[in-house]
Amino acid sequence: MRTYGTNRSNALNWFLHRITGTFLIFLLITHFWVQHYDAQTATVVAQTLSSEQIEQGVLPEYSSEARAAVKAKFGPDATVTPYDVVMLRLADPVYAVLWKGFNILFLIFALHHGFYGLNNILSDYIRNDMGRLVARVLSWSLALVLLVVGLYAVITAGWTY
Amino acid sequence: MAVETLERPPAETTEAPVYEDDARIVRYKIRTGMFAWMAHRLSGIAIVIYLILHVWGLKALTDRDAFNALIAGYHAPIFKIGEFLLLAAVAYHAFNGLRIVLIDFLGWSPKQKRLFWTLAAVTAAIIVIGGYPSIYAVVTYFTGG
Image (cartoon, rainbow over all chains, first blue to last red; front, top):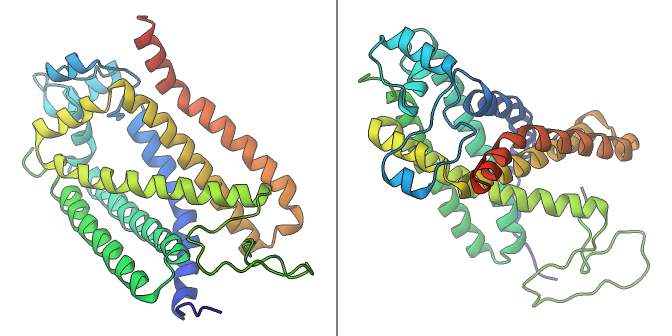
């Protein structure tokens, strides 16, 4: 019989995987609703643009609720682009803290859940210990890079608005 | 969940296990539960790949023009279809994951057949209702509506 690598710290991660997974259901429902379905805050709307339109810089059209909200917050001359719609939340002095906190929690949970799951799969199919170690170091390094990129983007968004 | 492979059959079987030390690909016995488990893995891998691209794309959030170009790009037909597939993968993974948590933490394994089909129906409803706007946008685009 081949001997496989043992890892005794996995019980905590196994438990955390279920906890983060349960939280992610609620975080994702909110995220999907706000980004795709809410008339005022959805940045990706149910509209299809052709590649010619995208090259010409045509932007998606927002609902009257979204246009009214952007103009109410940033003045009657404000343009209504995807960036402005997102900044309704991320540049708002009150809600920014709430939404940035939400996004930071979401980011950490999603990265832990995703990369722990990925490591489970990798260690099922990579059969030597050195290979597993390399896969583990590479994947968690990528997760760390993404954490830094994501934190930077979420925290600094709207600072110069 | 104990995973049955051809190399490691369930404990109660008497037939000799098939050892193939050089097998690079694990071959699974496919039943409903095993199909659910394989689909969970495949959707999980797809979602992690999406997560990497999505978080990397957040860099555009610091630049107005880059962000607008990124979001406009997400309205191309291919991304609308991708959006629907993403919803399907996430809905499946979320509800199958919820099923695993309910069985592991609340001991719902005696009710697992009913749990499986109830959550399957909820998942299908979410994919159809939630995915309708994306599919509608693509269909009207291609039919010139």
